[in-house]
Image 1 (cartoon, helix red, strand yellow):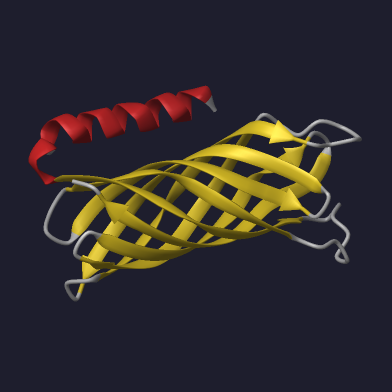
Image 2 (cartoon, helix red, strand yellow):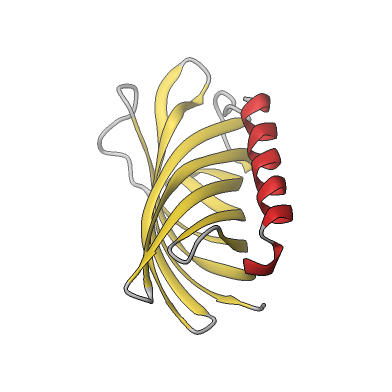
Length: 172
């Protein structure tokens, strides 16, 4: 997992140096509707409504293609069992119609806070992310679904799942 993280950082660094003139930086925040899915998860569990907030960059590779790395604090888990992450999504973004986009890519998550009473959550979470967005001037809105690829708890088949709605602003 550390190799994947280092590879993502290297790709971001290379892209930043090769396309420095086409970079936007901003902030975003929004609401999470999170839960856990898997064979070992009770279907009657209530999800957690939480929040996410953080920084975003959009690195244009072409007029209609960009890479969008983010650094996001995200409140996830289920009701009464909080797992908060520092997430690093690295998304491939396809822009069209002047204002709309679709995005997909991996998300690397690191546990920063939890209130587990039984067991320990895994310290790393690998997820996939797919979504869509609109942009008007410096303002943008996004919807995204994050689906876990690794188990959240050691020896328990339970993966993260979160639907996110975000708004943000590119400051430059």
